[in-house]
Image (cartoon, rainbow, N blue to C red; front, top):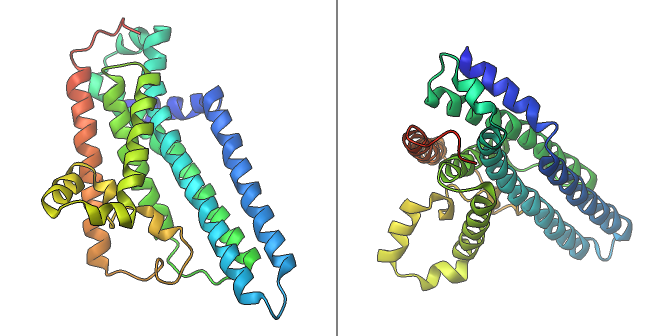
Length: 267
């Protein structure tokens, strides 16, 4: 009950957060760019150039969805960091913790509130995918649940990592580290980069950063090609998702362990 109350309060506070408002406006801007691209190519399509134009349209749609996906990672990281640091900076955490509430319950409520926010984001992103593919005249090639669950697990990982980091440093530094990790992961998942890394280095790297692996790299679902949207076995999905959730849980438990000994009066 206590955790749910904190979660609802955290989710409500996000509606008034200026940074999250800016990120929401970026979401709208990326969507409008994708919509403009689809409508432009659709108006250019003729019987003679249909195949070529469709290829360009698919590419631009994939780029739009890739931007929205990356924006979601930043949103999850910032929401998790700010939800904890904001309470400490304002001093309201002292009033909250004065009640019979354990510190792990406080973090769990904050984390659940972030996941509620990201659930709304993922649903919005799925709506964009459906709309763009429908306007572009392309059949939807993958199960809708895949585009809901995989991004949410991914964002759960970023939120947990960010929540751990904010127990040690301020939110601005946290976002700098997250941005650097996002750039590193994007570099590593490129085929040319992976092929240059020895196997004995690549395996520990995948264990340390599972977002560099094929199973949790959600960009394969956003490239809008038949090969990228191929169906996988249920065992593949369950293994990937279970590993992602375990990874997020480890970071959250690390955050709880550090937060137990942190002074609540530090900003």
